[in-house]
Image 1 (tube, rainbow, N blue to C red):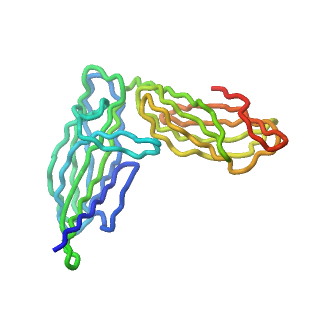
Image 2: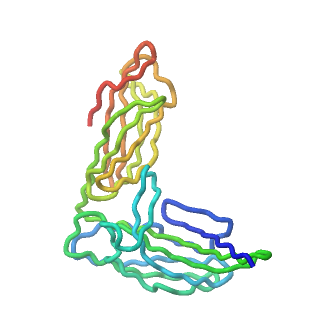
Image 3: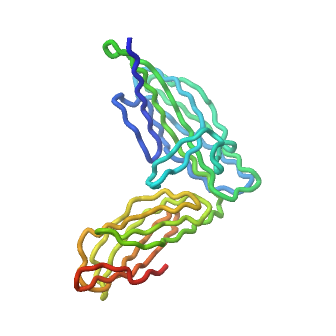
Length: 267
């Protein structure tokens, strides 16, 4: 008899689908905590079994990191692998359990911060189930995994970034977003191009970035329409969440041949 394995993997901000139907639903995809040294925080996560059969669950921690091009793609690693791992700070219970058909289960967690915290610490709590089904002559093993991301950051976190290295490509302007702070930044950047006299010619938004401390990520501003001859200002507004915003102004010029050039840029 042929055995076929189907993996269903669901995690905050990213999802991999398979042909089988998911059985589990996790109400919370991300836990964000602003903490100080010595803090203790308690909470719980609620997971549902949406199927008509009982499901056995295993709960475990893994580290993760955002990968280039920093569009939200993650690499998962064993607990304690990453320098900013929160694996030693988070305790959770139960670690194995069974959920009856159409039932639910609370998983309690405690976050214990050491005497000092100087940067963001991160990880993901995974909930994994496996079961088998027979399809014709095949035994199908279905492994389903859901994850809740943990963002544990100092209450006096430093959100510091710059937009630099302005460049031109065909029908677009490129910039680099550099994270000089001590926590992951998730900028959502909108932009508009304003002609001399205040007329706004183009508006849009760039892709969302997920930028760890010390990392540079590239951002591309698409010019959906060709600009006429004249002088313009490109204004970038990067929302860094929690009320923090990074604004960058870039001077542009288009000559009588239609050639676009960078005139200047201001923070």
